[in-house]
Image (cartoon, rainbow, N blue to C red; front, side):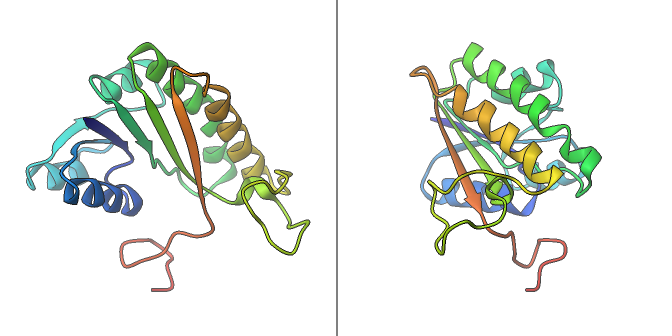
Length: 171
């Protein structure tokens, strides 16, 4: 099995790659910037330089993959977040057209908005209270709409990203 990890040069992508590799899975590390990918290539990993904001880049990223992990981050601005829905449309079209069986989106809890219950579980209403949350909800809606039997999809919503390699982390 080949697992394409999009956003592989980021803290989440590197951690996901390490976990899959530790379990003996083949990984393809996909990113849009050559310098961080070169460091990963020197570890012996398969790397692909691709811009998944384009149809061509999505096909390059997913070629021959059974599973895709979408851990791509964009700069923390409203303008950058606005690209998430269109990028996910391109990505999911390429996944379906190239025989990818599973897509995991690693995202955040922005689509939930403000808690309406004491406990926020996966079935909590998604009512974003910010522009960034709305874009993430649209991204997730596109992903989940593609779960039609040909592609299995899941959205992993993390409340925060932290650790030694995460910019702005408290650790």
